[in-house]
Length: 176
Image (cartoon, one colour):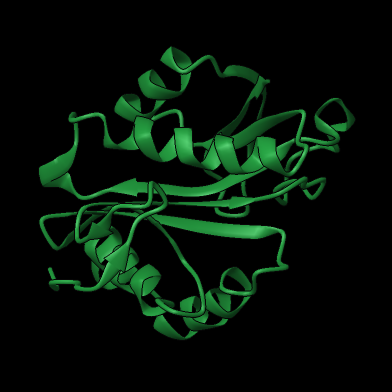
């Protein structure tokens, strides 16, 4: 993992520990986070394009990265009010006006320490500030630890579908 320095957290604490929003000041931090969590499966060119969207202050997308002791530990990516549903999922008008958590991940050594909950909290704070009525996400039912987190957090399953790779997926949502 790469040591990151000079980060100012959303909480106003200057240093190298806390949640940081991806902005034009620190765009490469999202790539660092994806590499730390997802490893060699990261498409750097694709992430670079996404970084440009997240780092635009007017964009309806945001990414937040958690850094502890100078190391990237996890991230969450969120889209403000999002009415575009995954390919293979039926139109879900019941979720109109909801935000969408598109990705969330925590490095293996930091799992079970409440980091994903903190990242969800930050994403939801941002969504509420944008007027979202709730939040939705899609997930793989086989990811048991993530599933437990979502349901403890108050998400409820809405529908099950198969994605383009023919994997079973579910959409879960939480109203604010």
